[in-house]
Length: 169
Image 1 (cartoon, one colour):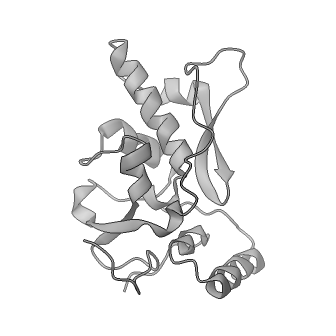
Image 2 (cartoon, rainbow, N blue to C red):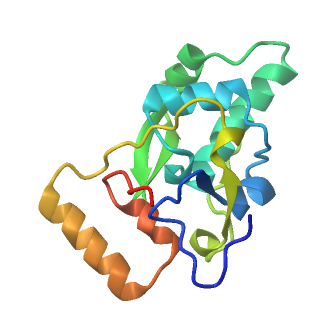
């Protein structure tokens, strides 16, 4: 479902999940979601709307590399090469400093500087199971500062940066 000009991705609306357009254009994301992507989101307790496009690109690149080599992608192997971290208040995956890499080149920029404001809604039933929401800022004062900053700058999609789960209306 396409959002109206006044729609914001958050707070979540009953039965809908916001998805960034850049996921499809830049990260090779497709629906239905793969079992591996869902398993990684569950493992790290990350909601799809909390994932930075560069993190999703690395996740999908790893998945394609495994399948291209004739292997089933596994979370334990993914965790051996990547760790979860926060990039511009979104979750992403960085390569571990272990001396070897499973990917030769990974994009360092999505080139679309307005990606946070380009989203649409999908039916919540499209992604099987429950999507988890991961806390980013355990400090209540920090959460309030992030909320205030986002409200005053009028960045519709950036409401996803709030560290508490958005309410369902």
